[in-house]
Length: 501
Image 1: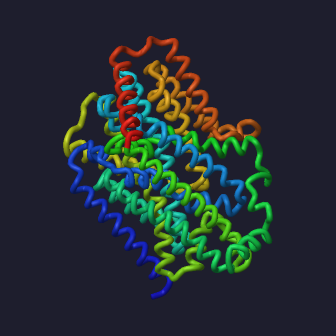
Image 2: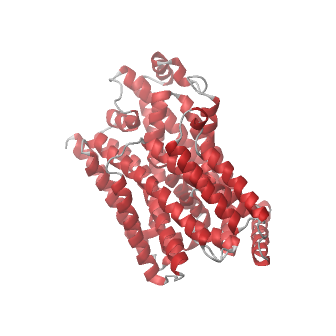
């Protein structure tokens, strides 16, 4: 068989595995709670790897290595900010959110939690949060579809549209039939594939160059500043913007729903250790891949036309075509894991939050699951239409959506969990402020002070507005205060039990 045939065989094998997991999950999905949150039955390994895979997307194997290849280790500050933010999220948000969502009307979505937490009688907070999820996730899903199209274009020479449709069709199929369980368990497989690929590729690349010393020499011969994390045009504003990516974790619905799906709050401890270990390994692997790519393409080939394909090109250069195909499948794993997670959360927002908030009619049993499936299809079609003619890089698309969620939801999540005085009006005003500032700042303002990543002003202004409006509006009623105290007690009991082990 020729090279392309070997590689396609590996990709088809991967696709078949994902679809099989989707149909297996369908046999364990009977109602809306199963379809949208897996019946709160996720273990720490599945939760950690699923959150990591859903988080990183094509950014990990394409966007981050591409940025590092083009600019050097100065771009690693983003990964550092993300790792710190993820650790804080697992440590301080995960266990309390798991307890509180069960106390607060057994909430299965982020908007429904906000609504129950503040006793949002009119449903305005729930509907608004659902609309924000749909808007920003449409861009986010679109970024994944763009990555899929560019992947097939770079790997197999297909046109962009064909590649985008292939990737989108497979991920929509297993998400549609299997729901949250399919998304979570495919994420586990995909997370393992991503980590393995990011370890193997740079190791083989260093062997190809003659060893670690020769690799460093090859990199320095291109530009000695590549190996430094300061200088090279890095400004204070740029450093703050890179580290501020970590703020986004508190408000990412596709990540924090994994906290809500844990079997028990105390399992967040094991999940944190697994998840942060996986994340550190993956980010270091992405950096090593980019650096090895600089050395390899300085010595053996012309400079890459597209830095975001450095992982793809290294895999095709260094490995047997079938193994290279599995490496390519790891990129698809990164892309598809995020798309599927975002689709299921968007479906939940449309069915559980917007539809229920507007009509007041709750869907039960298989009807809820089937409407959720229809919502997945609708959202995927809209995102696909936006992906037909991409004008931004993958990193730019991801950065915009990440900032939108972090600025809109992050402060509200933290205040909901740690400040009893938060009111419906405060949460709503802060959320709208954060989303609007991030959207306008990121899309229409640039230059000077506006070079600051939009998540920073959006997050800060959301926090300020939410606190001020909450303080000038009537404090929550006794039921809300009682639920807050019960959630705190449950979390403390879990922590005491862990300490006694």
